[in-house]
Image (cartoon, rainbow, N blue to C red; front, side, top):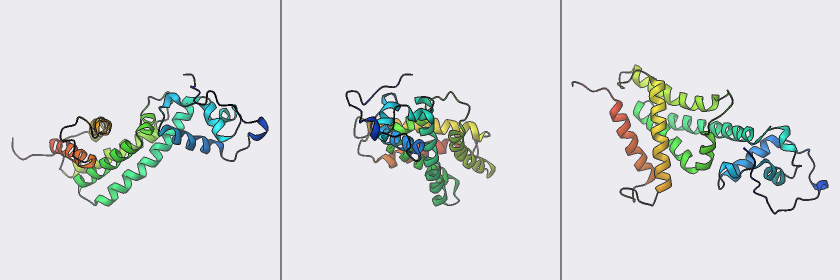
Length: 214
């Protein structure tokens, strides 16, 4: 996929003011990409524009990223690295109750997804490399909580991994719809984002719990 130059029409500073040596250029490029992606879709990002913003030559980013896809993979990994601790912190705050922990962890994901919608779209892009450990680790957090609920006899499912994927898929879709249509044509538009998500989660978890009798 070709880079889209979002700096079209902008003249470059003189070469003498754009040295290659830049300290941790890789980290700087990822940080600048994250900043741009808050208001810009991934397809509008370009290594050329980032090089210009960082004050380095157009070739310098290629010392760290072979192409834009490699940069976007690094951006995605950084997103998972930030989202994971936010989910863990929410789990810790929820205490020992399985339902409170699942709700807290899922809410943490939803808030991250709403506040960083463009970033999450990069994180969930299909990847053509074999290393998807960052995303897998995030799903594993949900799977672990479900496994504990199953072991304690609270949940009527037998595969925490498949159930985690199902919940995350449903949750991501719900977050995307609610965030996109917030203040728009939603039922009861005055309901707060978190209240709506909690209601959605309650319906999911109620469908998974063990029931007595038929």
